[in-house]
Length: 156
Image 1 (spheres, rainbow, N blue to C red):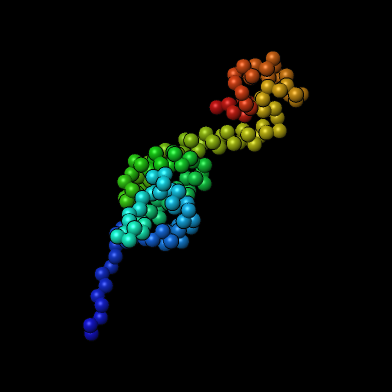
Image 2 (cartoon, one colour):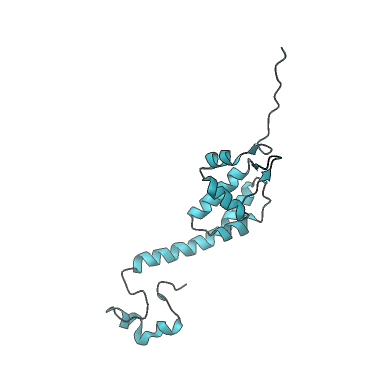
């Protein structure tokens, strides 16, 4: 029986084409190119100059997608991910450490968004003094002295 003996390919050594990465991750090829250009993910080139990605890139892209959905900037995502080698599989402790870095900024954003939602129909502190509420919230245009923009809604 001269059958071909196949050796199992470990998940960590398996190389994926950009099409496979796009299909498996649910991210457009253009987004994969973009992530790579920003240094969020890395590929290798074959002898024929085709991109190949380690299977671990799927987890990294999943983290990027979740973080973006949570409102974390690509710059902040990159800074955090740069703490870990590109090809490494994050341990539970590493994931906890990584996610905790984002928790505080997410809580601040949630607070700002909640305040924006709750006060949006109120004076935003633009300094125009056109709303009945403004003389109470912004007497003598004191907010205008602090800077431009909607000072009340943009407060820390």
